[in-house]
Amino acid sequence: MTGTMRAPRSRGMISGLLLVLLAIWGGLIPFIGPYFDFGFGSDQTWVYTADRLVLSILPAVAVGLGGLILLATANRPVAQFGGWLAAAGGLWFVVGNTIAALWNMGVGAPLGGEGRQVAEQMSFFEGLGAVMILLAGLALGRFLVIGIREARQAGMERRLADDRVGAGDRGEATAVPTQQKRGHFHLGRQKAGASAGKERHSTSRRD
Image (cartoon, rainbow, N blue to C red; front, top):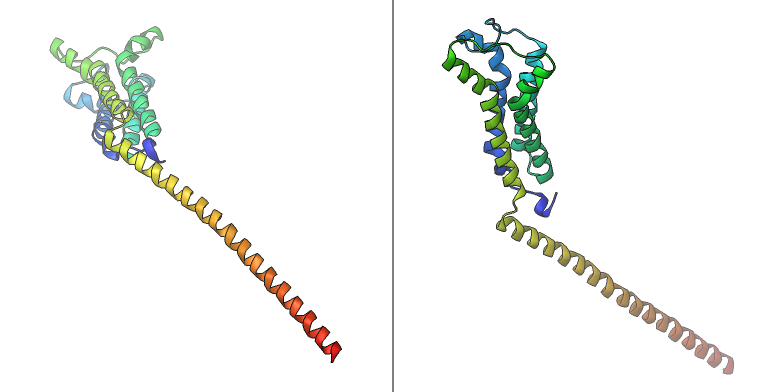
């Protein structure tokens, strides 16, 4: 993970934190909303149904995981995956009720009067999902853009790596002639010793 693949972790920190908080809200409000006469269908708390699983819990899990990824990672592709995951969960909050009606699914009618019903619809589904998509889009944009400081840092790291490679190549190139010189020197010494031995041998034979 080098160069432009790396980004400051603070890029997705705020968006990730807000997405995690909104995911907790979206996953828990169907179960605790009836405490305040705020919800859909049943006015009983902590009632689990398959409709709530599909329309609230699963998209909340997707948004929460995406937010945690944005909080924890400094890798651009991983952060982008987290942003798209959160955006997909937010989109399901927006359109889930409409699509679920085609499957004969739904969370029931909103509780309370007209004004409360609008607030419930917005805070449980459409409005909540829209805010999630907005935050995920902001995080994606921040990780897609490469800042000037990051580009300069990546260029410096690339130049340093090239300098290290060049220094290693020059060191190998200078080491080979030195070994060749040493080889010639030893060979010359061996030849000189051999000629000196021949001269001593011939002198002893004359004597």
